[in-house]
Image (cartoon, rainbow, N blue to C red; front, side, top):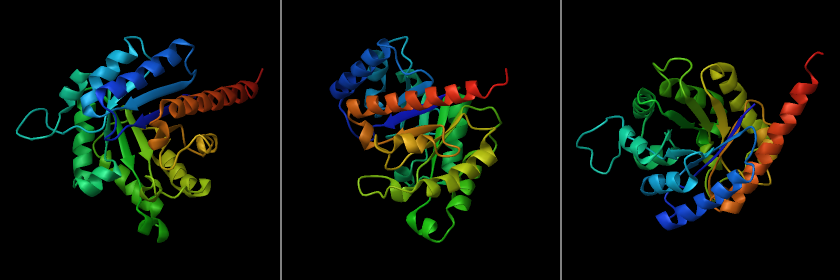
Length: 261
């Protein structure tokens, strides 16, 4: 089992700050890294290339972009295309975050267009889904998220490089409420049952911290974490990577112990 552990920096960090962060990660990787963990960072577009360079050519880290347009070129002022973020060094693109849906008019349809564009160019699509508080309160979380994923992956063949990040909207951000494990599992188990053969990994995001990461990684269906502010400090992120490596090692030992001899 490989656990994906990543962080999106949103609209934080200058190039200088990004280089300092990535340089610390490079030191950690050189010291032995994190077995059975696939780490990734998603900097702002202005820092993709400098983060890639600071991590070095043989880095285990995947570098991502926070957004990309569905068209390759054109009169789309302020946008960046998949070929452009790939040229900067990204091999993964985050798509459909709830903040983009709320503030920038992103829809299930445009998310699908972007997913197809990312996959068409051979990059990994990280698709964010999650229900708002009112849907959770009404008991419709599972159906809401399954509908989002169905729309996002419409026309996407099995075996594509797709990560799903389940992020309940009400759990995101500084004022987010930390969900109970059974609230998360209700959705992640359904996603695993429906899309386990399609997605590369199923990540959980929303109020993730070093205090709850271990429990979250033991949630049914979850094979990674997508972390916000608690990983914006490099020490916090390194701590999360160590926790994930421990969980992955324990899972490997359990699996080995159950193999018939």
